[in-house]
Amino acid sequence: MSTLARLQSWYADQCNGEWEHSSGISIESVDNPGWWVKINLLGTPLQGHSFIEVSEGVDAQRFAISARWLSCHIAEGTWHGAGDETQLERILTTFLSWVESDGV
Image (tube, rainbow, N blue to C red):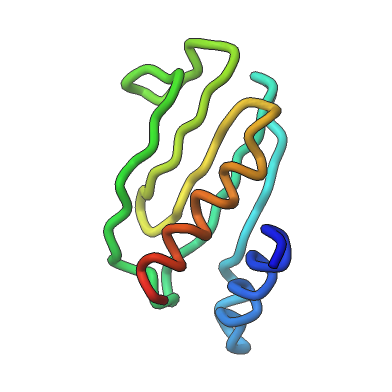
């Protein structure tokens, strides 16, 4: 199954008539240039699960310090994945690999 199909499937599984109205997934471009993916975990089986932060080419504040960079972490119930313009699929597969390895 493709990355996009896997993400669509996870999203569909969360939709319960309420979650999708105030939560969800956003994918934005950023001016570094790059991508920022935000996935609200509140009300999902992932809420409260631990995630090992991924940091490549970023400083302690998660700002890019090289041309190729990636940062994935959870903050306040939201999974954040950000990376340079070549990293969108890797951001999504990082999230999905966590989902699939956690069995939820």
